[in-house]
Structures are given as structure tokens and as C-alpha cells.
Image (cartoon, rainbow, N blue to C red; front, side, top):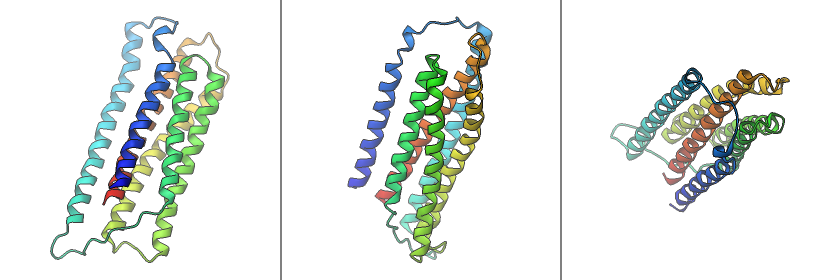
Length: 227
């Protein structure tokens, strides 16, 4: 119970910190080219598509959470539920993902402010931290297997399902992040307004995606700890 409360507090602090970072960016003071209606439509379409995809992802994890809770209740004829003691490395992994999301937000703030050189290091750092998180997520599987817990345990099977599904979504995001990073590290002509605008949009989409998957992981982690 205390662990779940701690996760809830961590989630609130994370959301608060991200909001503060966004306010520090002062988007109402930015100056630049006023987009045309066509540009508005072009930039809003990917954002709408991303939010639709995130809604589907959230529904998927919601179904997994419901199935997890129902299976934990136990049914006659099924293997009895035995709670897992989640490896402590998950706490470290969670901190790493929080840092990755934070680095992504700083990169977005820098690039939105036309500081591409200052933002690219944070953007690349977010990718490195995400890879570290994914590698760290494999360690609990190995530790549990070494302790003699395998697929015959319903709790272990759900643990692998939840963490693997979340990891696959991050891996998909890394593909987009890699392409965007390559574009950021190329010399971008300050007069190339369209190119720089597209890079900003890609960074914004990646940042939103990472923040959302961080919140999803915090919810999954709280579920695992509380049950």
C-alpha cells in the first residue's frame, strides 16, 4: 500500500515538474513565422494521430490491468495465484525512465526556442537513457528465473506480458527518435524554415510519447507493487 502511494506521489511530482518545464519555455513570448492554415492542418494531423494511438495503447494496458486483477482473484481449476516480490532493480529502472522523459522535455524546450545545438545533446541523452531502461527491464526476468520462477507462475507470466508490451512500445519510439536525432545532428540552415519546423514537430511528438509511456509505466509499476 505504501509503495503504491509512493508511486502515486512520484507520478504527481513528475507531472508537476513537466508542467513547470513547459511554463519556463514561455511559449506565449515566442516570435517567428505565423503559420498558414495549410501548415496548421499539416502539423495538427500527426498530433491527432498520435493521441488516437495513445488512446488505443492506454485501452490495451487497461484491458491487461483488468485481466491481471481478475486472474489474481483466482478461479477454480486454474493454478493458484502466488504474489511475486518485484526485484528492486525496477526502482532504478523507473528513475532512469523519469530522467529520460525529463531530458526529452528539456530538449523540446531548447529546440522550440530555436536552440538546435543545445537541444540535440538532451535529445540523444533521452535515447541513451531509454535504452538503459530497456536493458534494465530484462534483469528482473533473469532474476526471477534464477529464483526458480517460470511461466507456470501466473504472476510471472503477467509480469513479463506487461513489461514486454511496454518495452516494445518504447522500442518503436526509439526508431522514430533515431531518425529525428539524425536530422537534428545534420547542419540545418537557419533559413530552412520548413525543415526546422518539421524537426520541431517530430521532437514534440516524441516528447509527448515518452511522457505518456512514463505515466503508463508508473501505473503498471503501481499495479505490480500493490498486488
